[in-house]
Amino acid sequence: MSTGGFPEGFYWGTAAAAHQVEGGNHGNDWWAWEQTPGHIKNGDRSDPACDHYQRFASDFDLFKSLHQNAHRLSLEWSRIEPAPGQFSRTALRHYADVLQALRDRGMEPMVTLHHFTNPTWIADAGGWEAPETAERFASYAERVTNELGQLARFWVTINEPTVIAYQGYVRGEWPPGKRNLGAAARALVTLLRGHWLAYERIKTRHPDLQLGFAHHLRVFDPARPFAPQDRVVAAAFNRVFNHTILQSLRRGRLVFPLTRAGQASGPIRSQDFFGLNYYTRELVRFNHRYGAELFGERVVPVGAPRSDLNWELYPEGLYRVLRSLQQERLPIFVTENGIADRADARRPEFVLTHLTAMLRAIDEGVPVRGYFHWTGFDNFEWAEGYSAKFGAGTPAAAQCATLCADLSNQPAPG
Image (cartoon, rainbow, N blue to C red; front, side):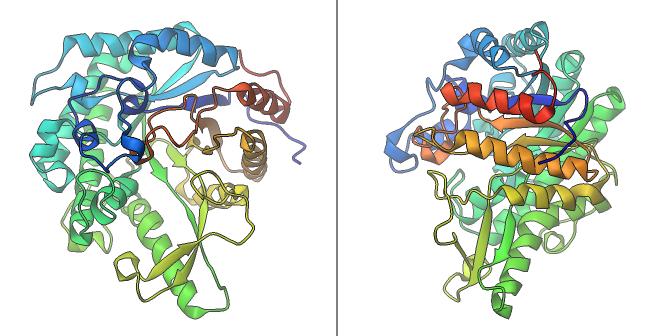
C-alpha cells in the first residue's frame, strides 16, 4: 500500500452517457437500431432509461451525498442539432441548466461531445464512413462550446473511437452493423479528422478550455508466452486497438494501417489531457479460424475473477497502462473504470484494488488528476440492454466512497 495520498484537488466522480440515462432520445441511430428484434438483449430499449433528462437535479444530489466532486456526462447531438445546421435553443438551455446544477453543487463537469450516438440525418448520410461527417461534427462541437464553454472547463471530443469502429464496423453488433475492416479503417480516419477539426476550432475561440479524447485501452497478453505465434497476435492487437490512434495523435498525421484508408492530418498537439477508459485485459491465442480478428482468439485465464460480462478483473492492468502513458506527457484522467456486477458483491473490492493500482502509478510519477467510475446508474448498456449492472448507485457505493477517502488520506471531497 502506498504511504502517500492522492494529489490535492483530485477529482472523484462517476461517468454517464446521455443516451444510456436520459430517456427520450428518439432522433439518433441507436434508437433506430433498438427497433430491430435481436439487436438488444431481452428486447430492451433506451426509453425511459433512468429518466435523467428530467431527474438530473435529484440525481446530482445523490452523487454529492456520495462525496463526488466531479461528474462526467455527455450531450446528445441529436437533441442539439435535430436537422443539419438547425440548433435547438431548448436543448442548449437544458444542458446549460444541467451544467449549472453541477456547479451549484460544487461538482466539476467533464463534458463529452460524442458518446457513440449519431443523429439519424448523420447516419443516413453515411455516418463515420462519410468524410463530410468530420466537418459536421466539428461545426456541432464549435457551436456547443460557444454556447456552454463558460460552464465547463474539461471537454472530451469523442468517446472510444476504436470501440465505435470495432463494434459497428468489424463485429457488426452496433450501428451501422457492418463487418468490413476497410469500413472500420475509414470510420477511424473520419473520427480522427473530426477530433482534429474540432480541437483547432474550439481552441481558437476558447484557448482556456481543456480538450481530449476518451481512449479505451486494454492490455493484450499472449495466452501462451512461450508460443511465438501468440506473442505476434497479442502485439498486433495492441498495435491496432491501442497504438494506431495514439501514434496518429502524437504525430499529427495518420499512421499505418490507417494510411491505407485515407488521408488526414492535424496539430501535433491536439489533447490537453489524456482520458483513459480501462476495464480489463485479454489473453490472446493464435487461431487460424479468427482471420477477421487478426487470427487472435481472446480467452480469460482459468479461475480468474470475472465480471458478469465475463471480463477478467485485472487491476494490475490499470497500473501497466498508466505507466505506459507517461510518454504522452499529459495530465491523465481515468474517465471510465467499472464492473458489471448484478449481485453487487465484487464492486467494493474492484474499486479498492483499482484505486490502489492507480495510486501506485501516481506514487511513481504518473500525473493522474481524477477518477470517474462507470457508472452512477444501472443504465441502458447498449447491446446488453439493462442486463449489465454497472451502476454504483447501490449500498456498495457508500463503501466505495469511504474507500476513496481512506486511500486519499484526506477527507472525502464535499
